[in-house]
Amino acid sequence: MVKLAAKCILAGDPAVGKTALAQSFRSDGAHFQKNYTLTTGVDLVVKTVPVPDTGDSVELFIFDSAGKELFSEMLDKLWESPNVLCLVYDVTNEQSFINCSKWLEKARSQIPGTSLPGVLVGNKTDLASRRVVDSAQARAWALGQGLECFETSVDPTVPRTLDGAQKLTPTPNT
Image (cartoon, rainbow, N blue to C red; front, side):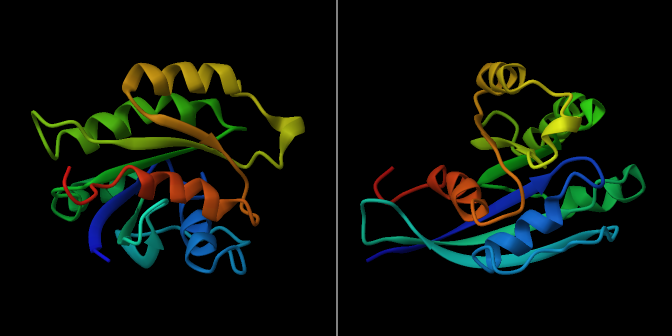
């Protein structure tokens, strides 16, 4: 059994649900933040997850990053050398989806000349009546950027969503 470590950057606009996703993932859906609290800087979530179809595991260090421009300068140092990116937008907020391009560019600039695997996560799908970002549009954009694409809400399906990021991390002999 091999235990790997991977740095995952959780990025996106303020109030898209990054912290709620991270907390729900850490607790296997048992806990999530119901009230919005501004993240200032970066919160670190660590969880060991199995690599499917192997006896290996990945210790996933999830850097839950502030979405406010005010804190963007401090992210440069904290975002150094990521292994995987989890880009989050709110399906009820079109601007949060549009801004994913900016977040992706910022993350990829941390490892120039190298491909950064990642996932695009459309969050807050439980607010279906307020949805403004079309699933097909998000999938097409993600595919064009070389990203996997998932949609979720902070409920028991969350571990499956962020496990998608874990599947993109390096495995032995790769």
